[in-house]
Length: 624
Image (cartoon, rainbow, N blue to C red; front, side, top):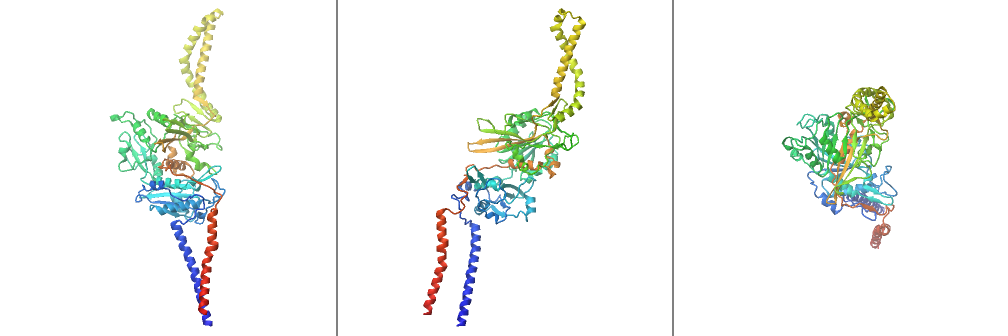
């Protein structure tokens, strides 16, 4: 009897242990399979985690042998299980709400495409790796809410970072999930050949020895920044070759940048052999998604051909001047050098300005990092295009332009014209300082010239107009001469004063732009819009080694933001943005909830109950 009880007890324990082990193994296996095959029950009234046929058509064109895309999540795995959407809005950073939808969609892309993989990185444990590979600039915003898309092909890395909020859109009453739009756009923008950045030479540009493809001279730091961003960097002399001819085996895709780094002589419009460099430049930049960077130093000779193209097509002109920051008060001065020609630029804080696209990651920081400017000239913006709200429409509405500053001359500053012709001051303190230093000397310098030029003609004119009248009044010839001298001297004084008003002027209404961004939208076939940009900066020093290597300066961030903008923008415009029908209802829909409740509370428990009844009946029959 005891032996029988022991045997039954051992069997019961073994059976129980076996059942528990089976349950554990089943849970592990089911969890792995659920993760692998995305067995997820979407509680939303409409499916959010999906890839449309249109996305598949676009992605099927991507060569899986030439691309190796990794989607990195920086959040803890538990945080990626957060399906919560209740009451949330854009900008919240204290919760990982909605990350599960983003993560599950990434896993779906990984499952369907062999060239895509998803990896998790711990923002603490993998901090060095993240900082080395992704946080290139001080303005990079990497957090558990960050998703990084990286393509690493033949050692050339390109990547995009997106925040959780970019996968959602908000209105006053609704919430939308645009995960498919963002994922497909990012993958397409990273796939394919690397874009090319062309540094133009042949006009005295500071890009190293002419014809030396390895020597980028003073532009080496900027060229390296392009390389870090996944670009192929080349030099081109437009007097010798057009862009397509210079491409060689390199890919001249639908995303490329032309860089003019400190030209000192004009571009030919009818050079040797009838070469028109401006036509070559314009023709290349007129194509899809071609972009331009121009860094122009003060004090260089006039370049009427290039100036005309930049002003007519892109809306910017470079003034013939140099910025001098106020150095009178060290506590408030933005000057870095003693003479004020090296200074910190002022951020354009308007969110509506196109230039804010370059600095938005910086202006949201608790304290603004300095923007280093060396000898700098101001930029004249086309008034028609400088509106931050309304774009200028041209070509019968096919193309629109917006132009706005990213940085302005510091508030306490003066623009000093190189030829000594005039000073334009933007602060009364500066005006008074320059007036004290220069006004009287300049006045004394030009007075003899103006007296010689205007005195005699004014004297003779007054004598002719008033001589008879003075004689009728009984004035002697010497008295008449005194009257004419008084008039002529007054006339000369007025001419000198008018010149001095232009030579030394005060304008406190605004400060001039020193770095701008022009944004052009081109529409093709009424369905595809491609963005082109031009960054204009009044200083090559802004992109110098000193500026880009110093972590305290924001120059690297701003230029990297521009390079990011200039990257390929292959956008699937026909993808739908999915409206989250009821973001406050995270429970399963009523009919589904009832069905699952019946299954979990009634049908599922009936299985072990039925098994137990069967065993009991069998035992009773055996004992009879």
